[in-house]
Length: 361
Ligand code: B12
Ligand code: SF4
Ligand code: SF4
Image (tube, rainbow, N blue to C red; front, side, top):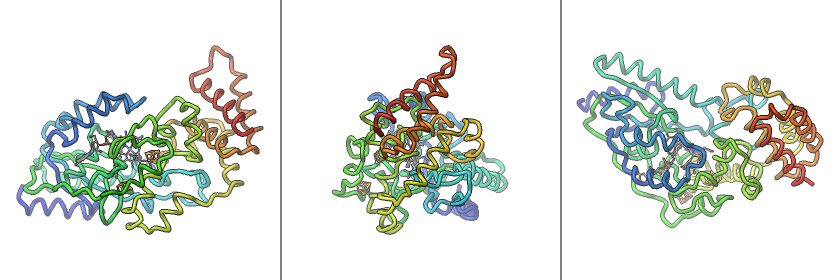
């Protein structure tokens, strides 16, 4: 396409609020060797799909054979664009939840913005094809966005922008358009800083830009089904869903959002009474009802089970003795099930109930 046509695409994206975007050619990702090495080391843990997706990640045209390039998009999630009302029921307000998850699920609303943008682009370029995704297709998104010029990969492995920090989602539109101009890699601006590596409670950042996902709190309380080994459980502290520490400590987020605000996120003021009330609600509510209330939030990645699992870990780590009777009730409820019908999740929850009670006492 001509530069003028590229401008036209840009203005469509801007109209949809996608002002931070850049182009990259659909070639083998810059860091694909690193990715393969990472998988070979087993750092992905239970996320087997990362291994399965490797061939497509190496050659993204498998997703869309006509595609020649990708338009990578960065979209801030802080402050959250679809925040849940503090008083609304369908969210968690007292537990510690990662910033990206404090609102409606981006897999729904961000994907919709990207899809609507594609519909408009299709009207302007009827001979071409456009396909959008964010987190949902086998694309190495950080690499792609870095090549599109949207930031550099920090030592915490996140993509960072000098003005906007790193608290943003990445999305991409694969297209058959072949751009005249593509992004350029940004220089590394981490310098001698090691704050993210130092703050990580589980030492998951084993080297700059290398994360052992099996140790990352965000993996342990979002992705992984099985409960973490007890020595890791204790290090997860009060994180109910995800973890932001290696980002809220980053000077580039302090610059973008204010130092005091980021520090508040590192050490939030929490009401013990409200936390207890919320964990009690999670542990006592039937799975279906819990799932109904929290639908359309990202908190249900592992369903009601995931939230119960995380609540037991938080209750144990915070020493919430007021919850012992609630935990005991949950234990009895699971034990009442005929042993033949007990699922892995039942067995895991039983073990966690025992662990939590012991840790509290
Ligand atoms: C699996 C996954 C996870 C795993 C593993 C994360 C990890 N660091 O590996 C877990 C569950 C732990 C996780 C956690 C989080 N995730 Co996540 N995750 C993904 C997912 C689905 C795949 C990432 C992956 O393949 N990891 C394997 C490693 C090896 O690859 P990588 O992280 O992409 O790293 C590459 C680059 O670092 C690159 N690289 C290294 N040096 C250099 C140098 C240059 C010059 C270049 C070009 C590249 C490069 O090499 C690596 C291998 O290719 C992506 C979506 C996607 N499809 O890409 C989202 C994604 C990376 N996650 C995202 C988010 C928001 C998070 C959390 C902040 C959520 C939270 N608050 O709890 C945390 C952050 C933790 C952290 N420090 O990374 C965003 C990141 C946005 C950003 N600004 O970077 C993504 C892109 C989702 C999205 N569409 O927005 N995540
Ligand atoms: S998200 Fe939390 S646990 Fe994971 S690497 Fe960052 S600080 Fe460590
Ligand atoms: S905390 Fe420091 S080392 Fe880590 S990503 Fe930010 S600037 Fe880089």
